[in-house]
Image (cartoon, rainbow, N blue to C red):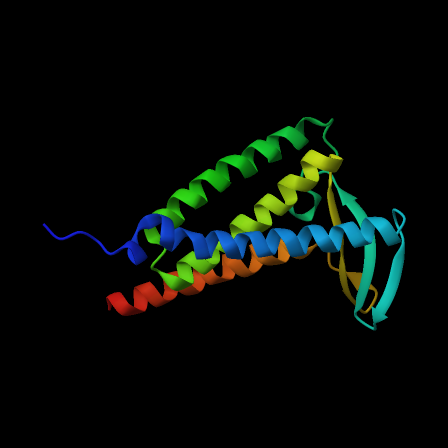
Length: 167
């Protein structure tokens, strides 16, 4: 019976993806720390004609979903993020060789944990990127949200590629 080489063991194939997630977390927390240090709540600085840096706090989820709830949502989203993180790590341990899929999961993992850290530390997520055009602004977001979005897009791309290969 042949044994699998050490380089393809589940733990070794998991490490690069956890490293990517860690990079997302570090970049996310670093940028949020800078915003908290240099901006007061509600401050906004124009960077370009379509981009501002702002400091806003989101007690809800995407697009401030449940932001007006009485506080229970903090722990709900922490728990949801923790469960999602465990599931994603499990998925990465099983599918780490599928590059696009694993990139997607690693980005989503880093983003989810970046926002969980905010909820644990502050009780809200620090958002600071604001894109706007013609007087209308897209809801503010952060590096973690960006990583989750890119990860979700990569999941779609991976599925489209998988379907195409199956034909």
